[in-house]
Image 1: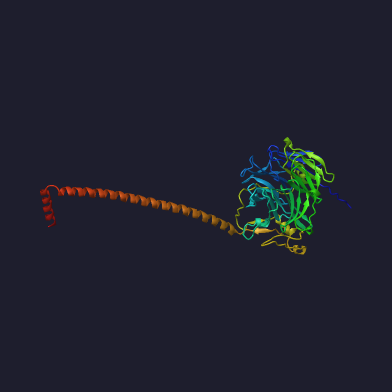
Image 2: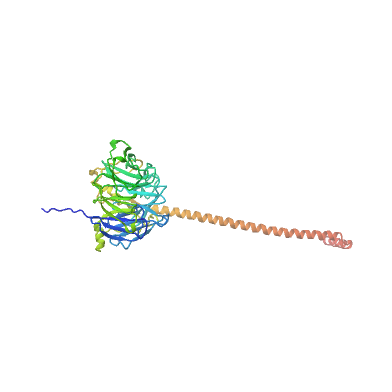
Length: 497
């Protein structure tokens, strides 16, 4: 009997900065520390770098001033990293997030607006005002059915992806499920994690707290307080450990023990946690891998930690001593295929991202929610699809057998939606033309009346002068020679007789 030995694939670390486009993206082998690859021209804000299915790197780019209207999103195929796809956006995009299958990409703007793209066809599916302040972090739930966003004012919002992508946009179909005003200052981290059969959101903020929320009810379950501002958070991939990076370079390590039996809003003090010390500046980014915890700081260093021994096993630096704003772990084979000039067999392509919202054209066109098909295909115990309130629908395995594995959740778009939209635009256009014609007609009538009155007044003035001259002449003639008057009188008598 042949024994198959499973060998874990080695990992690579991707890092970038937001200080200069010249610094770019650097990729290291995490096991050897060897620099594997470098991509120039990248300047990405915190939480603005991700990897799509270990095949594409995606980074949001800010302009020099970080103002609205000066941003872009760049996509690098790992098999052709020197041929990036440049995508200009209507405003500067900060944090990015994607579904696990790499189909949907979400970006948060400095204005508080959020954007959803289908990266396969590049269409901008949805744009909406998610917050009144700039978005700081945005993540998907574990099953990609919900979206969580956090802003600079400390607000958290939980959105339904099905409702966000609903083309009808019915008022009764509100995509906002929860509005969580739990923090007193800017959001710095968001995590989604299952625990004890429940789904939870973990949030951190500059107010020195980490809060745990129930995904389904939106209720606050636990609060962890620290003496310092928390700048970022991450979870250990295997152990239930929560890492909280602080503004002084300390990393607090807590056992993530969430239980609803403890009661709502239980408070855990920061003095119950362990500390990792090795940075001299505020922690900017953290992530975890099979190798261990990875952190970056304002001291311009990247550290890989042995959490058990609380020691640093490896240390990296970017070029030109720049601080690292993003850390992403990918498979080392993705870079090796690039170096060996080989192409993967998986046909997964990314299209240029659109700037205009999705416009439906053609008949019987549909928008497929590929990511949400997992709700019907995976062996889950519940789905939260809320219609008028919070519904928890249990779908058993026996019920799932009646659903075809090839079934996809689709929202069919009827052609009359396009016609109605076109008719509305044409009606508005006709109304504008009517107003312009009405204004022009009134102007012509006014001019015509004004010119006619002026001519009449001029004629009246001329007639009155002639009448006055005639009266003066007749008066002089009456006072003239009597013989002339008598002659005129005789002539008049003869004429009338």
